[in-house]
Amino acid sequence: MKNLIAKLMLLVTLGGACQPLFAQNDFAIEFGTVWQRAKAYTLKIAEAMPEEHYQFSPTKETKTFEEELTHIVANFAALQYYATGKKANFLDGFKRKGKSKSETLSMLNKAFDAIMQQIENLKDKEAGHSVKFFAPNVAMTKKGIYMLIRDHMTHHRGQLVVYLRLKGLKPPRYVGW
Image (cartoon, rainbow, N blue to C red; front, side, top):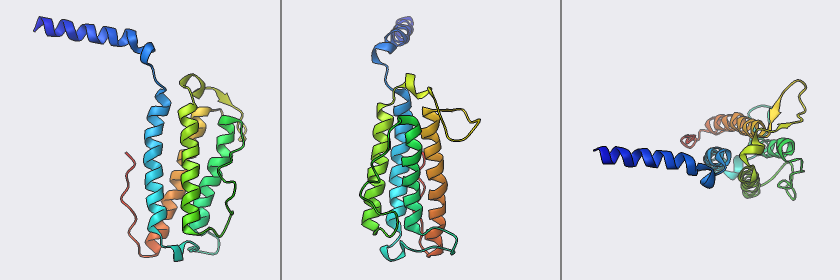
């Protein structure tokens, strides 16, 4: 028993000492896992709406189903600029309105993948760097920008669940964890 405890203590000690040698990008690992699930769930919602209802809007004042999805991606493009300082190109070639279901799904995949690549390239030491943000008196970090992108996407994805229900469709089961 003493031998086992001594071996465990050595592993814990060595594990802590060796951590910098094997350190990974913790933000990319943690956020990336959540982002991949968010992508999968968002795509399931987008796929659940039949093509003939992609231009459905519950009221005159609201966006169509397709426009909500485009709005999500446009927000990815707008906000990612604050973290990268670069214009996003994942909306290039896509119409702002009137896309088919397959065009919309392609746009979503491209945008989610672009954000994932940015996350994978964001080092932990850079994730906490402050960025200039459009909202006055709001302190924001690069990490905060990606959290904001996710929060905004979640908000609009929730609206899409209502669109599906208004069309009598059962939304995909939530898989946020």
